[in-house]
Amino acid sequence: MADFTFDGQKLRNNRTGQKVGEIDRSDIRAWNGARFGEIDRKNVRDAHGKKVAEFDGKVVKDGLGKKLATIQDIQKAVDGEAGIELVALWYFFVRK
Image (cartoon, rainbow, N blue to C red; front, top):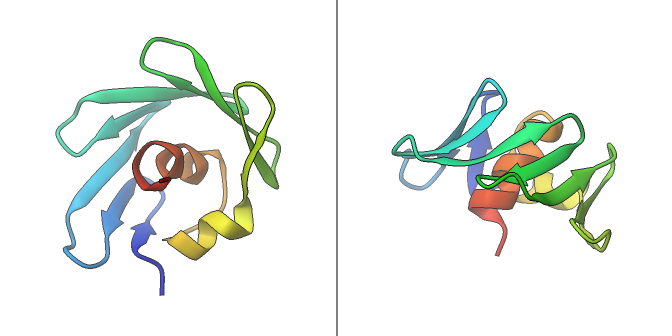
């Protein structure tokens, strides 16, 4: 079973039930409301606007084009519907 659950808007830790992060329109916010980044079409940008990840539907690449993970790898760690929102929350809060 995955350690995290994504319901389409909020990412929760399965062990504690606490909210880890959430999607607010195109912004990615932490549990306390701090803005971590934003979703820009198929790109994930940090709070300063720098491109940190790109998602083509199957593979997540970093800002330089190096493969980080596949959507299957992400879904092993996070239960939820695959998409750019899941990838963005995984990038900022789950990835090690």
